[in-house]
Image (tube, rainbow, N blue to C red; front, side):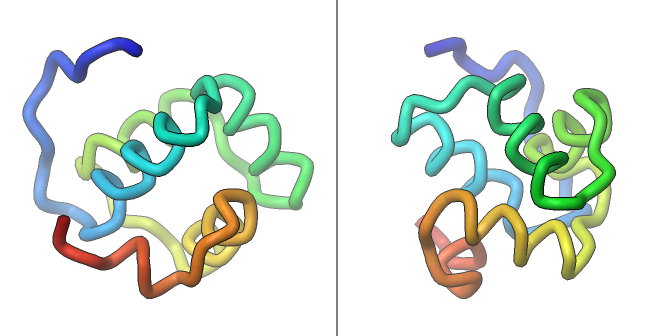
Length: 81
């Protein structure tokens, strides 16, 4: 598992948890992006990386889609861990 090189931003609350949960489930970023796209969310690698890095806002549709893919309640993405 690659370690994050840059510090997290402050544009969203969910990015850190999305990254943690994705890595815990052993899903590569490119595979995760593909799942997001299949579920109808328009997401490219740069945009997704910025979401995980908390340097851009997350939309409600993205949060909903990501929670479904990860199999967690949306609230879990907002928990401070």
